[in-house]
Amino acid sequence: MTDIGFGNHLADESTREFVPSPWVGRVVHIRPGGTAYRAVSPTGWVWTIAGCHARPTAEEQTAAYEAKVARTSQQRDALAAQLESLNRRGGRR
Image (cartoon, one colour):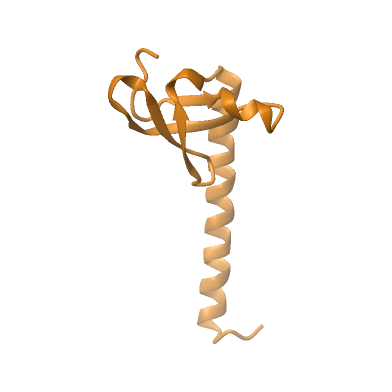
């Protein structure tokens, strides 16, 4: 692979044997020579992609990844607010 840097999105073609579309992740670590990449999923799962199975994502895949990150962040923030509200009331409803 060439020109893959930190923060770029990659698709892991090796996952197609398990699911219809490849997993997509944002690059957080690159092995020397691009032999492997560590990527993080929109929900925080980190895995290794062999360089021979990695490819840049299509625009739709990148957009879907970013939308999932936004939804996950909104859900996390809503849960944090709900927990804060419960803590202020002493855990009572």
